[in-house]
Image 1 (cartoon, rainbow, N blue to C red):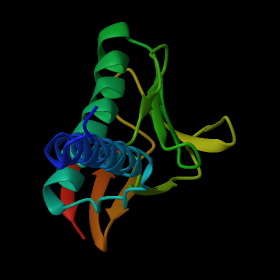
Image 2 (tube, one colour):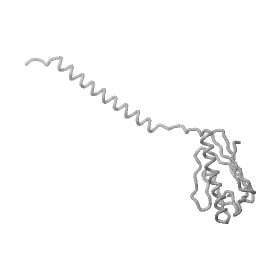
Image 3 (tube, rainbow, N blue to C red):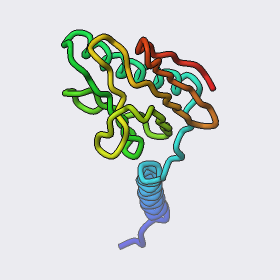
Image 4 (spheres, rainbow, N blue to C red):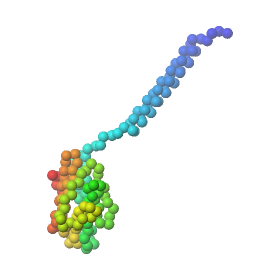
Length: 158
């Protein structure tokens, strides 16, 4: 019986090294994937376009309240909840305002209080108690003004 050849032994060692290398690469890939999935991502700042889009959406909700008062012939309230970042027209589901957008809501003393905050009331003829809402994010501000006499909603950068 002859001793095992070095040639057969070295090819076996190379094959084992290849398997070990493959195992290490697979383990590193799994760790990298887990790190990517579990890593916290920084909150993206809200740009001017996103803030404007949110202001347009909110002003649309306010206009819905006015339209409801005009079509039903009775008063309709639009309630803004700055604490929960929501706006709601009477009888409709609340609409969430995008995270990262702060709301400052100032209304007249004539506006009713609903849910701990003043609601914007539209009368059957379209008039309202009036108010000003400021939406702000990333150092930008947009103001929504509701005219008490006409119920018109105006939007302008502040």
